[in-house]
Image (cartoon, rainbow, N blue to C red; front, side, top):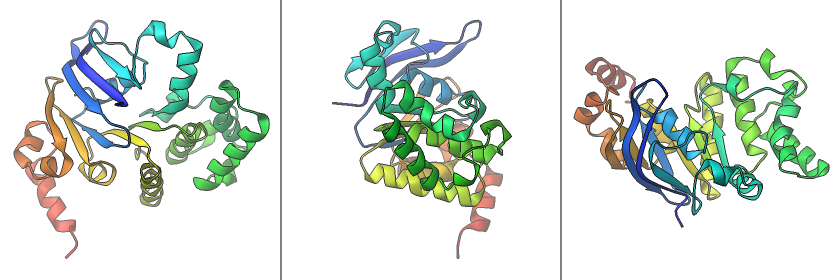
Length: 258
């Protein structure tokens, strides 16, 4: 069974033009996929649709064998199972963090799903250690730096132990050390069988988190669906979808190892 099966998907935000047009693709269990495209191409919108936060104007998204609809997600049994299995890291961490302390933030999801107190405490403790954020466990998330907020937002997903992670610009706001720690963590999750779908316009990040790429163009359609290596070698395509320019190519050559 595919994790996601997207068929003829189109979406428009109220009062604006199309955000996605006739998008179709499949995601198999355990795949590492990157959604590539310039700002405004529809990457974040597509993740929202995969997570059941938006619903298609046309077409549909099948997730874990069930078509995502408002009616389905109103069913407690389905919604709890879906939210347990699919975690979404928002592009803006402030959209995701609302509890009075980091510990409360990490415990919120498991608490809503009815886990026991001991199990929640163990999961929170494990994630604090894993992400190296124990020192500010009792602090308010809103008092943290952007990079620290990013790690807490990710931690709030990990305490649910999801099998699928939807990641919207996951390294945004992180310094180099924190980026490497995050990438090591994603590698570990992938090795354990998790499915990763990452949205970014950063070609370096794409090369670290994915094997297959879906490239969205300025018309909000899929311009390419295939091996990531093929995309990274196609300068014409990358230039056409505004992900690469000659100045960037020259800068990349200057910093490549000898």
